[in-house]
Image (tube, rainbow, N blue to C red):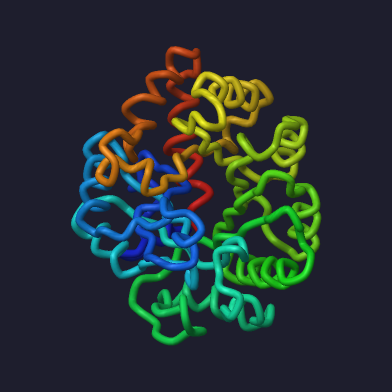
Length: 318
């Protein structure tokens, strides 16, 4: 069966997707996340639409919205933005770090089997709404297209083993893409072993944030050798490091022959979107500023094409 990229407006053939950023946040409802960090509230549909249209005009074709159900995801607004902007939006099921859920949230007590069924349902039938408060209350028309997961510093202890077990079941059953938030201080290699043992297709997995979360680049190589892709998103995030430092990390991965397993994005928050803050870098920063910097740094057009178009087409299609 031919693979498709599963967007909020339906399935799209991979060749119809162009420039893609693989870990963004363009709509986030108020909730536990914004209580922790006000920048994690992105709740003005019109402003988010302006931002997404600017991305489209700069050359953006698609993006992955990385907020999962039960954690301030706004699937209805994502669908409207996709219709009005012309940008292909891939929404997420799965789970985030537990700190982003209230102590009484259902995600903390759900069984592996039930969460797997939840994810599979969102991928194949449509996303549930109202899940910040309840477990599977209402199912809408737009489906998720990727499984979001998050590795915290406790790795697979406690509830996280259940959550990752559920995600593994969902990936193995559907073949869907899995993205993994990698927290600084966590162990990507422990997770690799677990996913392999649980039958996950590692070629359909990408690890996010390792460009700022992992100082030991030898681990990058081990992840790549396992078949997992790396998504770099510490771009225009100067509190972590400069774009020049980011480019050096990219060039190192490319020198290892990892060009077919490299993705990029911005991991936007409210404070990084121009429609919310005129001084922010904006969703189109990679297209307008970072891609020209890649060229100046000696990264070839062929390599840029792989990172921005070819690799997303491959890994997002299932």
